[in-house]
Every structure is written in structure tokens, then in C-alpha cells.
Picture (cartoon, rainbow, N blue to C red):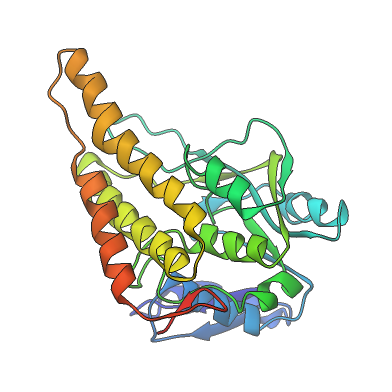
Length: 270
């Protein structure tokens, strides 16, 4: 197990220090921010054929490693696995990011993944990657994800790039992690702005790399959050809200189109 500590104090180091006698646990402190940087560093510290990833605000079942790794044995083309992410119950106004797959299935093309993403994105809080696929796509794009320029979609982006390379993505409905990542209404507003900006920036680099089919995802989100949902609220006699979502999506797209991209790897130049 690899622990990459990006905190500005020594609380994490002190908490895990008693466990470092186990040679299977590796710890490193990094002064460079970014979820993608941390995950790439963690991968570099290990040699296992399967990389299993969760977040620091998640609780996993005792059989999680076995369960989320199982789909890789089903077919050699499975490169990335996402599982369900369920919210820890909180009795106050707000939201916890979560996702539930209705059934287990393999997604075999990036076009299919983009079509699925019109309903919502998968979450890296419950994610596993075959090392060969991870190396094939050169890891996470460090310009994406929390702590980076475009602070979202680094997990889905890695899966999409794997699909472009011919790998499959497996949606595992039989495995679930608990997400203790509750956001208050004020925090949720900031999260929405961050995420939509990040998704726009992620979409932009695929367009710059010649994958125009992803524009359907952009158009779908723009219509859904900029037209359809406000119209429903208006018809229900409510004041339309949420216009910041398509605005941030468009801003992310424009800023992404301005950045240099390695069109071969579909990764932003740092």
C-alpha cells in the first residue's frame, strides 16, 4: 500500500507511523499539490499488476480489494474498473457525491462511455486500474483533478484515454464504498463550479486531439443544465436556478482550448 501525504502538517505521518513497520506499507510526503500527482506517485512506488484507488474520505468493505479486482479476471481487455460509491447518511441540507450502477457491464468504446456520461460521471473514490493500462496512457493527467488547474474528471479522463487505446472499462454494481464526503449547500455551490469547469477543460483536450464525438457530451450537459432543468423549474412555478453550471462548463472548455495538448497521449502539457 502506498500513502502519498500532501498535507502541510505532520498529522498524517504521525497517525500512520506505527503501521510503517509493515514493509508492505510505503509512505512519502510530497510538497507538490494535486490528486493526479499523488496517484501517479503512489503508482510509481508499487509494482502490483492492479492499482486500487480510493479517497481519504471513504470507507471500504473488508473484501474490497478482492471484489473490485475480480472484473480484471473476466477479460484481459478490462483496463479500468469503477464501483458504486454510496453516501454516508447525513441529516442536514447538502449533498454527498455518489453513484450507483444499475448492473455490472463492460464498456468497450469511448463513444459508449461518453454517451453514458451524459447522465453523470463515474467516481475515482472507488476505482481500480490494470497497471499495463495505466502505463499505456501514461498515468493521470496532472492538469486535471483536485489541486490542479481543472479540478475534476481526472478519473473519468484516465478511463476515456484507456478506451481510446483499446482497453475496456468495467462498471461493477456488486461492489460499494461509502463516501463520507458531505458538502453543505455553500460548499456544494463551490463544488459544482469547480466540477463543471473541470469537465469543460477535460472535454476541450479531446476536441483538440481530434475526438470530435465528445462534443455530444458537452452539448448534452449544456442543454440539460442550461435549458431543460431551468425550463422545468419555470413550468413548476419556481425561479430558474443553476445557470452557473453551463457557464462554468463553457469557461472550462474555452480555457482548455487555449492550453497546449499532447494529441498522441491526450494529456495537457504541464
